[in-house]
Length: 136
Figure: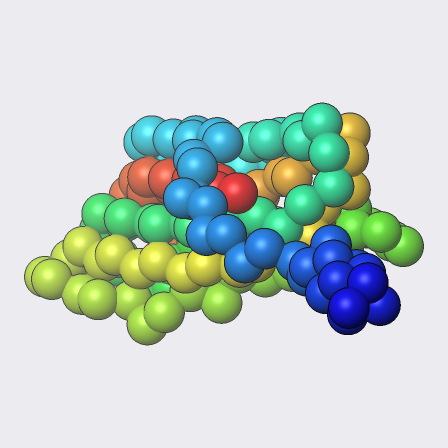
């Protein structure tokens, strides 16, 4: 009986609780009335390693050339630094305006920035707004 009790206690101690925690917004940043490229800009720097979901939304006015700004995300993981173009869903056009959004999940190392940047086609005219939300 003592053996069974020890095994049951040992098994219970080795089980990992599957507790769901709510998603928390850790950073927000808005870039309003942009007309050119946004250089790499830190949106968030974590105090600990972790997985983060980054959502990017772009709204553009006067889409003369049909080319919206391209958004890029930069971060440092466990082994290297990375840069990725955020694959934004197809632009939704309404007359001469457009909107699109996309999400990326990254593992960011403690003390390292998560940055966003954009490039704009030189043939584009008008302005755009870029909204970034980072959740843990």
